[in-house]
Length: 623
Ligand SMILES: Cc1ncc(C[n+]2csc(CCOP(=O)(O)OP(=O)(O)O)c2C)c(N)n1
Ligand SMILES: [Mg+2]
Image 1 (cartoon, rainbow, N blue to C red):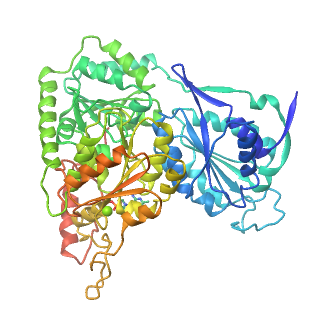
Image 2 (cartoon, helix red, strand yellow):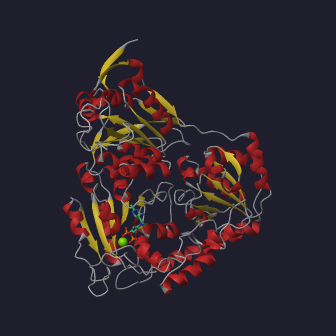
Image 3 (tube, rainbow, N blue to C red):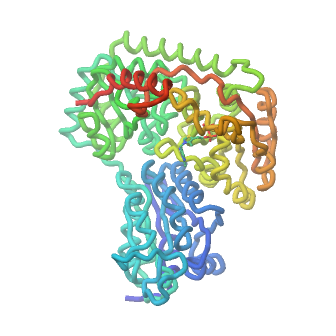
């Protein structure tokens, strides 16, 4: 057996450079590059290995210097989302805080089922200098470190205590990253001494490996049972989730919906599965759904869920569906089994094809299909009105989002994650391309947005990327603007300034908590609350100080003009627009379960509790 002498870190870099994925004849690098921030935990181990790779060309592993470890994991997750999970980035962080900063990113990736490879550095395997700077000391166990916090949020976790242990560990990591069911954050902890330690590695470890991203077909018995339920349906509704997009099943879904006259409602991750003006498109479903989709969900007799995990926003906390039976086509049994469904465990594309063949000429009731079209058209009228309110003196958020939607090209991408915008976007966005609507709503993590712009742009350099970020999110994590600037990547960042939390403020008010603590204001001396004057915070100046071009707009007309300038720009450009914190949103037609205090001294809370108790009566198990 021929061997090569390398450090553990050098071996890992060389190994990663030789991993590929393949699906439908498309071959991609599994780990396209590495984001990192160096500290004493990784500068001399992985840092040296990455430098050697760059200097000698012995391994193709581009290195990108991020500014915040959480943000770099978001960038990797966004890259993977854009790449339909066929490719991702690795993230190296120093031990201690550098590593634990990645835990939030790991949770986001795992919950959204997006592959990211995390390489937190770890305490000395030798234990010689214990406690090393930033080491957690545990009186009960010697093998615990802060990195154990990654365990519940990782789909695979290992700590490489000895160099040769990397071989099984790295192979297992690749298997999990490329498995459409298992995928999520994969964490290999690398003790700082082991990273730098040499070993004689079998050359075979570094050969090119191709991991097939499989498309499992349906089981014959499950398919028969699913078809029987569907054939009995008169009022069927499709719920399209992220699995449709990741599986690239959108063409098949469009054809299936048209052939069988089945309306299609979409989740956040499934938005764009059918283009907005497809004859069967009825918009978004659930708490922030269209009235069309929510009415149809209440009346449907069979729901065909495809690639959805049925989050509470989709089901309106288990209130949106009526007496429907469910058929769930999903690559993961976990999701296929939800709502006591007839399970169809399969790849979305393979499953839709099999269902289409089995259904033959079957069609939904003509009246049902027609009613769906009427409701969908009515909802488009609601959107048109929300886009053009003439709200003054500050524009309404829906006007800003509408202007952005109109200004964007067919293939451009819009990114968002948290605050009031995901709800408005989900209700009103007109998607033309399956990759256009990039809203992270599995973890809804403030701070994802700008970092995700970086990941998206790396994945799809030929698409224009528009990041929508609230002032709250911006204040949490604008750190990757300088990274975009240094890498020469152009993203348009739209900062929507409303001096606080439009989202949680409105929620607070509806739950009787009077918008307490949701405004960015001076503390008022008399009330003792944060409801004084607006703060002298200038996010436009802040963005300029980070190296971006900055444009400001205070009316919708100015915003449109700024977008046109930003579109033509060749470098990262921020458009700062102020909107009315209290501006009207779109009409809500479904509930969201947020419990209200059962006892209270406040009238507002008591009234909200009564309303909450009423709403909860509609909540059900789907048995
Ligand atoms: C990291 C993180 N912390 C807290 C929350 C809870 N949260 C959801 S929306 C929101 C406020 C967002 O404010 P902003 O970005 O200004 O958006 P707006 O609501 O004003 O549209 C908060 C605190 C979250 N989703 N993520
Ligand atoms: Mg805000």
